[in-house]
Structures are given as C-alpha cells and as structure tokens.
Length: 558
Image 1: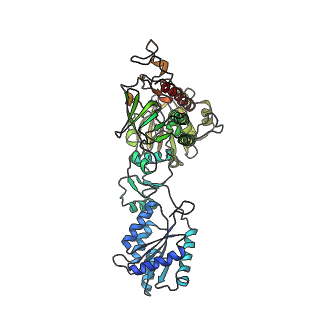
Image 2 (image 1 turned 90 degrees about the vertical axis):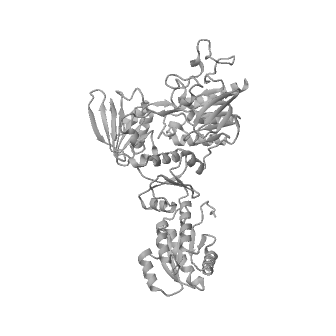
Image 3 (image 1 turned 45 degrees about the vertical axis):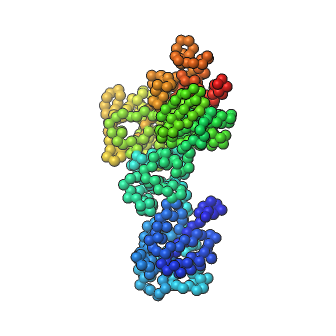
C-alpha cells in the first residue's frame, strides 16, 4: 500500500515454520507498526527468500528481518545469510524458544546479527517493541531510500545496454543503472534468477523482468504507448523530431485527430543536443531533451496521440485514404500524412567500427555515456553544429576533447557562436584536415588511426570514447515507388516537383501541389527529410506548423 507521498511502505518480514507462532509474531508487529510498515510473514526460509526476491525486483524496501532459528531445511541463520545478499541494509533478528547461546554466537559471526530474541516475549511492550524500535531508528538513519525507477543491469561495454539506456533517457523514463559486476547489480541478477550472460537485464517498476528487451517490449513495459487508440485519423505524423512535434501541437490544437508515430524517441537529432543556443525565445539556451519534453507534453495536452517504438515500413494510397504500415504488421489509416522522419547519422565506414559500435564508438551525442568520459581523452568526428555542441558538453567531464574535421576549417559547417565557444575552452582541440582510417580494440575501443588528408601520414592515438557526427542520410527507403525523392533520398515537395506544367507526372488534382505537399496528394513533408530544407530546429518547427495549415486546405477540398 502506498504512503501519502506515493511511496510504498517498507516491509517487516517474519519467518517461522510454526503457523501459530508465525501468525502471533505478525499480529504483534502489525499492532504497533501496521500503519507505518507492511508486515509480511512466511512459514519457511525458501518461501521467505522468494518473497524477498520479488520485493527486490519491485523496488520495495525491507527494514527488518525476524527469523526463527530452528526451522527445517533452512534454519534462521542460513536464511539471514542468504537474505543479506538481497537486502544487505535490512536489520537482522534471530528468534528462538530456547536459550541457545551457540546459535547467537554463530549468527553474530556469520550474518552480523543485530539482535537475538527469546520467545515468547510477553508482554511485547517490554520485550519486543523496544528492540524493534531501536532497529527501525537505526535503519531509518541509514541510506534506505527507495529506487522506484526502472532498473537496468548491464556491462559498461555492452552495445545493447548502451542502446537501452539511451532509449529510456531520450523518452524521459527515470531509470537507475547498475553495473553487472558490482554488488547491487549482482544482487539484482540473483533476484531475477539470471546468470548475467545475456545483458541488459531490465526490471520494470512493477518488478517485471526483461532480458535483452526490444525497444517495443521495453516501451510497453515502462508505460509508453505503442498501439493506436483509433481506427482512423485526420492526420498521421511520421517522425517525432522538431517538425513532427510542431505539427502534432498545431494539428491537435486546431481540432485534427492527430497521431504521431516515432520509431525510437521524440526529439530526433535535436533531442540529443546538449545545448541549443540559437533557438528563438531561449536566450540562455535550452537542451534538446528539455525542448523535446516540453513539446511532447504540449502536444499531449492538446490531445495528440504519441506512439513510440513503432517503425513505419510502407505507405499505401487507396482513394482518399492514406495508410501507414508498421513493422509489426499493423496499420494506421488517415485522410492525410505528414512525413517528418528527419535524418540519420551516416555510418563511419572504416575497419573496426562496426564491431565496436556501442562499445566505445557511438553515433550522435549518446549523452548517457557522458559519465563514462570522466578524465578520459574523447574524440568527436565531424564539424557541424551537433559535433560542436557535443564537444562543449563533454568537455565538462573529459580530460580532453578532440574534434576531428575533414575540411580545412569549421567556418563552412558550424555556427559562429559555437566556434567561439570551442575556442574559449582549453580542453577542446580542433584537428582539421584529419580523418579516422581505422579503430581497434578487443571488447571495447582502445585506439584510433588518424590520417592527415593533405600529407597522407597516419598516427595511432589511445581512445576509449569516439562520437561520430559525419553528415546525415534521410530515412526514406520505405517510400520507394510511392513518393518522389531526389538523388540523395530527400523528399521532393511543392515547386520542386514541377515537370514542366506545374505538377508532377500522374498528378490528379486540378491544382499544383501545395508548397510542402509531395508527389502524392494529401501526403506532406517537413523538416530535415524534405529536399532543400534549412536543416535547423527553428525552420523544422515552422515547417511542421505550416504543414498543418496546408493539411487543412487539402481536407477542405476533399
């Protein structure tokens, strides 16, 4: 049962193989502590251990363990010893009906016993409650705070562990990270009955255990929506970056039945930015995560539906209906579709990168890895704004940050304000005319081979973390054969579709395409995925809002 502040009451657990005695102990404890603590009783050491493991997975607190000494199969000392592995901070009491000093000495030596009690304790006000009061006071003074968040147990060089942490962080899901080779991580693995060979282990707030979960399984267990609530919508927004979120806000606020479909996490590349300082209305800058969170909450408040971990694989046109196909075989139908899928960072095609991705090599800022950069030499590949923002952010923790830039300078690809910031930070070094020609390491990144593009010479440097920002490619292969794109894969819209008579071949309406409309009437594109777009957060948000206005025009003409 939750407390008034929403937390669950801590547990007093008692275990005794005599049912009558077990009920009596629990009755006495509930009489005095029932309002503040949850009293749980068990009639064997094995059942008590099962209960403790379930509590551990749920994130429950256990304050005091009271165990009868003379139990078959697993005596009280054996139980307390095993219980210490699950709840090392719980206070431990051994109960016996006999004056067994040998058992008391063994318990003190084996389980660091807090107290030894003789049964019966009549009256409990004199012989039981003062002991438990002291133990609870001691426990409350210790670090007994609950951990209600999702728990993730993984290895520091596990690629999937890194992706799960990034997924949770970008979706604003509170979680606690435990290394699998440290004590609390080992306790959680044991409580879940896992050997640690398959990681990560994810424990949902309700105690459900997931091993190497997919994004969709993870989303469903942590409270994110993964399936549409309606059968038909006015507008389906495909992609949750700034353009998609802007469209969701304006579409829902103007009365359109709107659903946004995102394959990983809302925010797109902008959501991974450590600091955006040139966005209108934020003179002190704003992190991508903060901007994304505000936009998502705003869209939800207006009634937009947001689906996460849903990958779109196809677009079908049937009369006035536009159907979006998802990877799980389901579909979402609507009168109009807005494509805001953004772009993905290009892969660094050099030897060793594929094997070490997620093990020291990361695409994008991977802000969850920032803590691991403490006092390390970090390398960032790329010379655009996203790379510069990551360099500034990581320089707060890293020993040094080196920007590796293929071009002769930063001026052609990075905003002036960022270049000035980087120049003012002593720990950031910019190496122009330099590229990575190979990476190496056993189970994680250990070094880079750098090549001078002018002279051709190479240099081997030690490195434990490398973040890659080398341009972007649109995620539009699934539109092949349906929507026209340019030679780079970006979606063509409006005037760019003109084949000579103001409209693309096969265009049926008696009007030219609207400015953000694609070669398929009623299907629009906005943001980075659109050909010749500005590739800036502010312009993406503006295009998302403009697209909604054009959707209204389209719907009025049906």
